[in-house]
Image 1 (tube, rainbow over the protein chains, first blue to last red):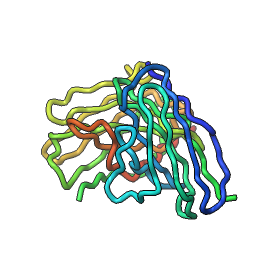
Image 2 (image 1 turned 90 degrees about the vertical axis):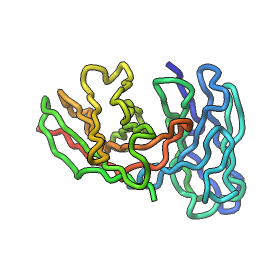
Image 3 (image 1 turned 120 degrees about the vertical axis):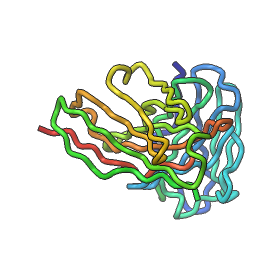
Image 4 (image 1 turned 180 degrees about the horizontal axis):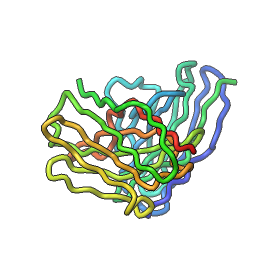
Length: 107
Length: 119
């Protein structure tokens, strides 16, 4: 089974900051990597699929990159509404799995 | 628009079973897959398995094999997730989520169903 290691587990940043989260797969998953945002008490929402494709309607300040085993998720300019927990997820083969999550807070 | 609506919260005793439903609308039910993901209080997301509503085939991770059963009713565009031999560690919010035939990302998700296991 593929393990996903996400870091950091929590992050405090100021409005306007550039924020970066990393996700590492235990084996090559090509670009089969997705990113989700989850706000408290809500279901996760898809932000990025296929490692770097922006889901329709998602602000362009969100971006993803990487392939193989190392992936990066970036918010170019943090906004107050971005406060949430972010998860990576691989969909290379079954069983699918998620990273541990990164809780993002405003400084 | 595509929508997944789940059944309401449940409280169960240890050793019992729970069956959660997820009703789909806004797309062709048998064209896409449905997944179940759970989230224990304050914890991360855990994939529980998937069902192909077209033929009913399923795939479960080893952790849940023998304890989880996913089924579907094509007449009502509803999928079900039944978890048996419940224990306190199964207390969690359970989500259904759709993925496409050629797209393995989860979108959208249901609103979640809280299952509480307590004596």
